Image (tube, rainbow, N blue to C red):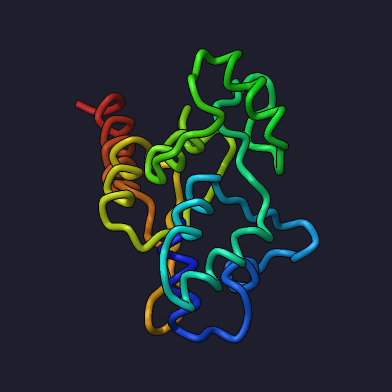
Amino acid sequence: DGNFVSACVARKLDDSAAHHVTKFLSANPSTCKIFTTRAVRKELETMKGEDFAEAANQTHKLLLVNENENPSGGGGGGGRDDATMKKNTKKNNRSSGYIGNVKESILDACKEDNRERFIVCTQDGALKKQLRKESAKVPIIFCHVSGLQMEPPVGKKERGRSSTFKKRGRGTK
């Protein structure tokens, strides 16, 4: 999300937000793919200020989520050009080539129970709440004064207790 990249820039981290996410995940930089949506790029491009300009520049180095792509057709890949985006859009009866709202574009990328296994990096409390509501399978990373942090999965303890309780309850009287 743009506000995450902006927060990383504002905290004067020594490298790009993508570098810090890769490092935080202990991932190999050559195999870790960092994505953004076109809506995020466009939002940052319209904002004023040096930090936003740097954040916009960083998002142009990231892969693009295949918006409006049919998941069975391999959605979630990287960097499609405008012609491909428009073709995919027509296939899904969308009127525009991309989803213009940042929140909707991110929620759309994580649809179908996060089939593409995206991790969302955001500072936006409303987006975090919506992601938790729609799917507990979307890990969320945010930038904190002490560095990057990941929110724990939603309801993991509660789900684990209820399933354990049900299993024990069936075999005993």
